Structure formats: structure tokens, C-alpha cells
Length: 104
Image 1 (cartoon, rainbow, N blue to C red):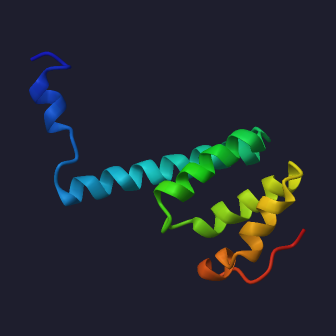
Image 2 (image 1 turned 120 degrees about the vertical axis):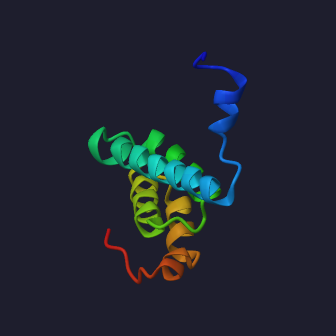
């Protein structure tokens, strides 16, 4: 059987609720991990912000949203985008995920 046959590809599609959840969980985890690597290991806030904003848009109820928001806040401040940082901090987003204060 060919690796890229229609049946092989079709059977890998997440067509059940369980498979869709597994697929989405995998994407959420990958975006988070990728964003953290860009920001914390490669010190590339610009690319990390793009990745974490995609995560934030696609998965607004992400399990690690507190870390996502903290790192976005950190990077926006580091890049001089204080309005975006203030929007995250002042927009009630931190209270929604349980963070009360952020240290500069």
C-alpha cells in the first residue's frame, strides 16, 4: 500500500470528536512549545509573539494561557510596544486566568 494513498490519508483525518480533540490538543501544545523556545531559548520575541498570538487566537481557553499572556506582556514591553503590553495587563486578561500582578 502506498504511503500517500487516499485511504491512508483519509484514515488519518480527525473526523471523530475524540480525534479532533487530540489533534487540537497537539496543535495547542506545539504552538505553546514553539513560542516558548523562540522567546526563552532563542531570545526572538518577534517570532515568539507571532506564535503565541496565533495560539491565543486559535485556542482562547488554552491550558497555559497564563504563561502565554505573561510572555506576550514581557515581549511587548521588551519591543517597546507598551500599548499592547498594557492592553494585555489592563484588559482584564490576567484576572481571567488568575494572575493578579505582573512584575516589571
